[in-house]
Image (tube, rainbow, N blue to C red):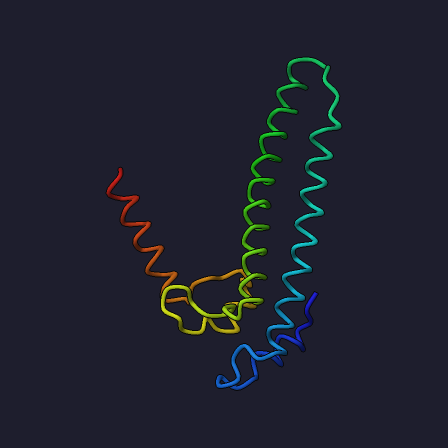
Length: 140
């Protein structure tokens, strides 16, 4: 895991040196580490789902099915996260990492430390969420 010292060092770098080699290497390492963790959690979920033995009474079966439903939801979230990590790693290779897909402006080190898979700067993300909220209200 990245250390507070590394993160503080990145945050202290000048804005005109944004997404330099050191920053890109840091985020590449962090994303690869997160990718490995997510893959491990997905393996655990798959293993848990395949090792369940049928049997028991209806209450046991209902309990298992509820646990399975939760595991499937978690696996779905993990799978989406894995896709986002893969996309972020591709953006690093393409030289596009750290820049907003909507505006082209820097996303910012602080936001990337919080969410290294971010594709939008904070302002663009807020606009997106406002639109989604508006459309959700209209649909009701």
